[in-house]
Image (cartoon, rainbow, N blue to C red; front, top):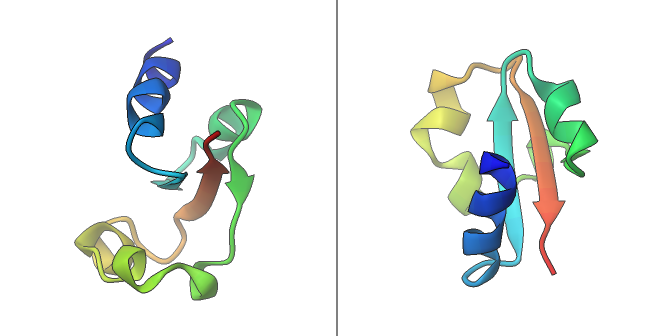
Length: 67
């Protein structure tokens, strides 16, 4: 319910969600997130500290289009 609520709020402002996860990819896939190629992440996502180093290169990168 929490993810659904946050997605509803985000849907008013953005078209796509980007997510990094260490170990919960199946949970988010079940909610409609799809695997994405880290090498093709938009520059504004790849430049974040989470993407560049905090989550590590093994983190699964997922996206979900809204609307």
